[in-house]
Length: 176
Image (cartoon, rainbow, N blue to C red):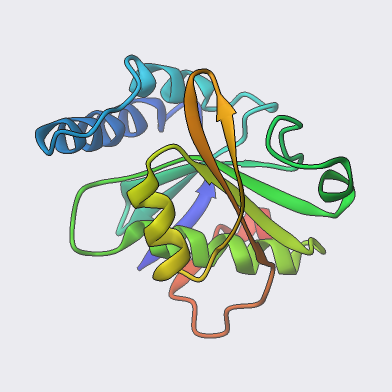
């Protein structure tokens, strides 16, 4: 069973760090870049209200994480876009596997946004191949490319929508 829940500062920093470290090694083993110190940064954000990290667990093991922000960054979205009720996925990481945990997180986000009255789920990527995958395979729409800290950011959006066949449960305490 897959369960999405807010990361708990008492038990999730180490598993989050371990999964991000594993993904970074996987990326670098394929000649792709990853930010230095990202595992420690993301693990350090667990429990921080301004950076709400959520974890995806498979039978109690953390297999993915993402930060779900209630505001979209001004450097990526227009004022009009930021005024629309949305969530912004930042720093989505999964264990390298064939289980498509990232796809599960994205579908959960679409459902979560719809259940909480949002109109859109927004996200960005700094690798063109990842942005292409999000758009071509997962159905995201590329809104624009923006320069950010010397890199190209690919800014995407999807309408929030219920996912009736979703295999990810949200922790009962969060769903209310």
